Length: 179
Image (tube, rainbow, N blue to C red; front, side, top):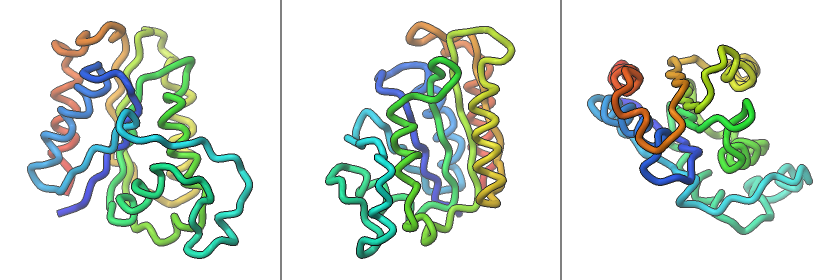
């Protein structure tokens, strides 16, 4: 049994990203402990690149925000799944802020070995996810992580557009495949 943390990057409640995350979560809960960390529920400031966390006790960030709560959750995770709507070929700013705040030596005590990716986009362009996929692969390569897979869904603009999409079953099966 693995501890799975899903970083959900949408602030729109009940939207397509949340529905995709919930499908993945239902599958993953069959054999794992799963927790959704939604950007809608936490106030996380962007990293300012001061690197003070490299000098501070326990490598804590000087910013007093909710990232300290998320760090505690990440310390227990075996698998991290990033989920986001796609805006201008990138993940949401809120999710990017969380990820950027992992630029801390504190991450060295995390025991994450695997990562996954769930993305939705209103666009139908064949390249809409390419920039995100490249950054994802660079992170995998740099940290020596294992890719559990991705579910990428185009043409889901309005709230609920994903409801009849096969991607919900794909996300469920990806979650179910984890051990």
